[in-house]
Length: 506
Image 1 (cartoon, rainbow, N blue to C red):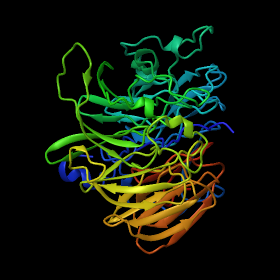
Image 2 (cartoon, helix red, strand yellow):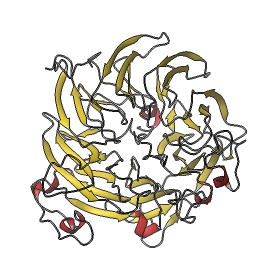
Image 3 (cartoon, one colour):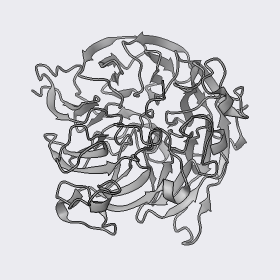
Image 4 (cartoon, one colour):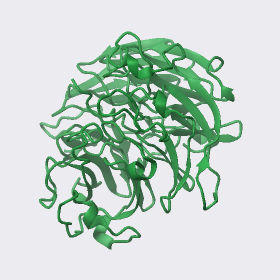
């Protein structure tokens, strides 16, 4: 069978110094995970232990999505953002398969506006049918940043077209329609695109299956992974010169910098891991996991870059998560379930001056083995042989980003297992078998671990060394996105619906 979409790994997911190691305040959830560090731990309290969609118990509202949803919700400025498809059109003007980013009212789930993006038809393996927009949003003030299903980095107005077309981009009517179709007149419920940067057109990126990125915003710049990957026949990387990580000016969308590590020829499948950030020994670094199974650290871009040219990101170190794996002619190992390179679909998490990351054989094309690894990011150069602190084997392939809380690491895998291990030593405390495999990541909030599976079961467990199952709920369809908590509400997205869950709601 051909590879399914993108690990939405989701795909998903923060202040300097001590702020990098503690949860964010209970408030909006502006991006995937804690700001910068990517740790999916929330300071929200009073969240329910369970909910019942059939009776409405602890359910504030339910918003219908499309038929396939791989994105993780984000809450900001009284609005909820989530990517989906157009199989249940919110507006009859938009027909057929489309990528959609919904902007919903935080109070009742009503539609505020939507970004609608035509597919890269008939590019099957570059914009998978009905996969929708997989990238979660990143919000700052009145601006919403995301990556469309067409590989476009976009800056959107938080208020959509309700307050007019602000520009400088004013081609929304053309952008909403596929080539050869008549443009659609812009309406109040359409997105207002302020600027866009087309990674395919500008950088020659050959995205694979779908574009997936949780944009990292730091200072005046956006750090974006490109989703560069295999060709349609899964035999080689067609865009060998395309970068895996780029930096854009957040105000204008201008390309400022890119990595130049020659990662692309070594990509085993695609580049789906989003960047994180941390401060080590007085130095602020961007952590990026390439499609070659290597974690890199780069210096951040400084303010006021030269107006001409594109900077080369300065590499500080590289850490090969699987140094014994094949490194040359890697695509000869496609479909080899016993021996293959590793890749990384999750995000690296920076916590207490350590990095935690999951990696292993590709779900569709590689070996079955996968691991959770912890290493010291304070060195320079090639730190592969010196930085590892511990390594823990998980059940099978792993797409999930780990969550670190109270000295514990919680992570899920594609072997239908949730793991709890010691953050200092990697010692396992407990595992729990679920009904289905998990592409989503764990959320830790209010002393509980929340996680959904691709077999529709949503689990709530105690965030402790002792295994305690609090509840299990069967929902309407598979769960691929990571749950999030904001302003006293838990948000759980299935393929078909978004649930806003609040204690005592009905």
